[in-house]
Image 1 (cartoon, rainbow, N blue to C red):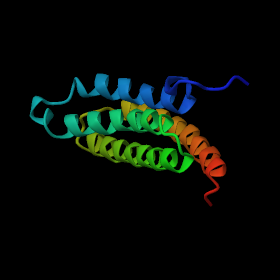
Image 2 (cartoon, rainbow, N blue to C red; image 1 turned 180 degrees about the vertical axis):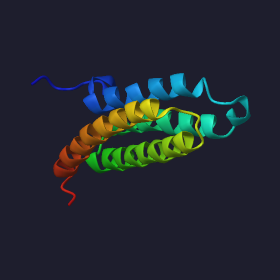
Image 3 (cartoon, rainbow, N blue to C red; image 1 turned 120 degrees about the vertical axis):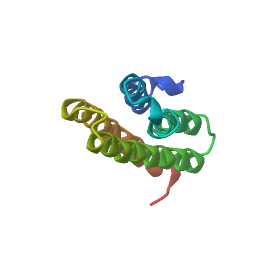
Length: 125
């Protein structure tokens, strides 16, 4: 297996980026009154997932990387929570919600693997 040299080569980042693109497309259809509320919050949280992975990858020490990967997981759960709110307010259909949840679960699984492997490298338990 080739060594990963750039953050965007990480599958975790690629899966997180898919969430960002989905969220941006979905929130285009949110009510205008939500522009500075749920729309903005969802977009910031989605971008934070991939940004924390990228920033962590750029850190020299494994423990520093791990902290950013944990932050990424926190932002992933933030998007999850906000999507539940969007569904309950009928801003998204059940089908759209399920599609985003499927991508979130995929990203969560891959990010979990990245966290475990980084934790092993760092010597953290």
